[in-house]
Image (tube, rainbow, N blue to C red; front, top):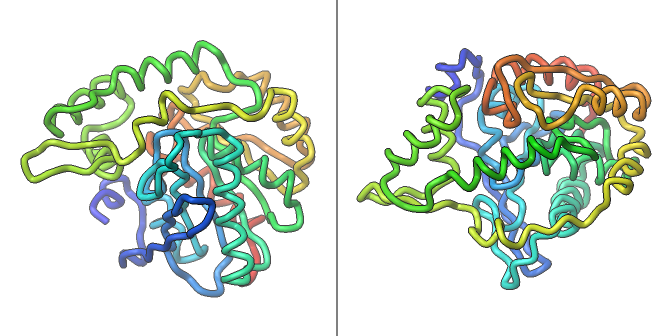
Length: 297
């Protein structure tokens, strides 16, 4: 709640969310349910090396109008780690399909909106292309079938620069140093969600550290373009103004490809848009949700 107040985000319900776990496929999947029976449902999917709690501020701001769910993909957050560390995109897509199956078959939702950042955005349009009857609308955040290679290398350098051990305060200082767009309060709050901190100040990542060595791409660029082109749901592409991940030409190509889609840029945000500028992200997302994510449970 205090983090939301510092960001200037109005919160009408600060009660703790509920947590759930989905079994099957040998890996338990954790998800957060922010409540709201009868409200239109929105499923949030995080990016690589992030977690369901990446979306806390977004869900806090929206939970009075939407039933927000956020999923931990396998090997991330509180979800299980597969015995054999094969972290392929197709397995992440299966995780999202398992989550949506639960929402439709157990909670009996009629339709939903997907909102995904980076890897999560890719999964959103892949799912929407396969299950058009289930998806009301999608928001795809700072990702495209074709990404800037140098920007991807920059993300890899960022990941390589992250400490693997030591004191938590030292981790905060290091991440603040290499993430100047965020305040130290933002960095600390984000890291508290991404790590487990011991009483002695030591810490460990929640995600499976084998992720870095066993990430595997399942779809070619052509296959991703084809999937995006088959999306029929209303679509919003949200980009960080400071991000170089998706070129302006690629954004124009996506908007031309997906009928009725649009793009919005968030100032003072790089690739991790909802964490870099939470209020700016909400200003881009909320009007879209109010227009398109209307359904009944």
